[in-house]
Length: 245
Image (cartoon, rainbow, N blue to C red; front, top):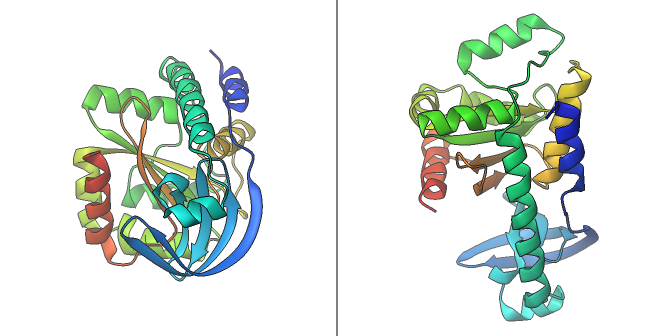
């Protein structure tokens, strides 16, 4: 299957339409976690997306208190049906990805930027290749949706965490890394740009940075949306908690 055919398949996968909300809440309780100064940005049949004093976040409506579920018109039957459909669609998509031959994609226009990045970490750009490698090496795949040359929180997290030896050592043992970049100054090849945009839609990425941990079969284990304080230790602890799911 060629890359354009794969992109066409991904475009057909079911995504619930997002509704703009822009509702302000003094706090939002999700399980045992309480977010302060919350602005709800989008609501789907299954999820709520928001910003808070901690940055960008999202949560499952089923994990909210009953009164908030009612407020956001949560329908458990509809949500379960949609999640089941998405599960089937995701399985088909991942099956196509796993059988897609590794793609050769062009790097950013500035080779010096690419070489400088490679000095710090080995980030691939092709998800099918990463999943095949993860299956062979029995590792997980970490996706980094980023705006590498303009997003201040992406750059800050990159310097504080992703370029640090603690993270690099952990990644070398446990992860296959894939960077899905959305730059503004440098240029990506048309195929790479299109592939990144399709994956952003597929995983419902609403802001940068967004980190998504997948197992070798392409199933999402967990995600971090926005900047996380605490350096490598906090991020690695989060990744470990996702890996145990």
